[in-house]
Length: 129
Image 1 (tube, rainbow, N blue to C red):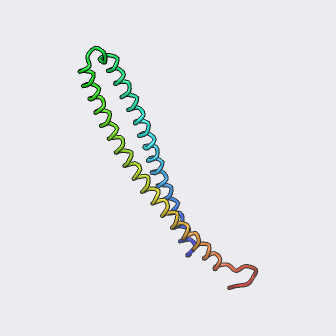
Image 2: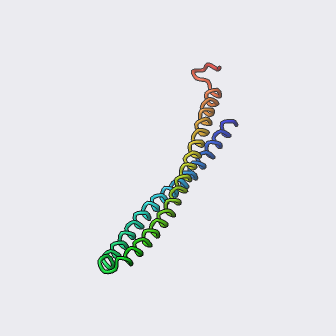
Image 3: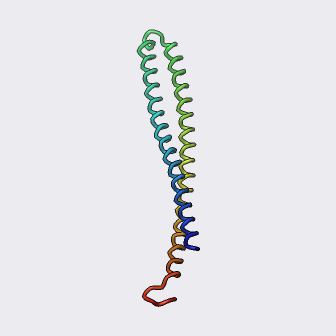
């Protein structure tokens, strides 16, 4: 009876690990997406600044300065938002990894207990203990 209860407990830990790994995978994909969005934002900023440069640099330096500063502020705001999201994802990833480590530790403990119970339930070589 005790062995079957331990097996059920181990199955519960397997299910928990599966759920945590699923959440961890989703978080890692979001982290990849955030990195992609940072690169896209940088490319967009570079395109805007180049457009401003070619249109206003030599002809209207005052407008060039204003538009460049505005583009830079918008870029910094977008990067700050993405950075905040990345930090949130990193924290979420760390929490999930901690949960996974805890479940692995519990599972290891219960596996050792199962092995001990199996050894005590059976005698080897006809000698009982």
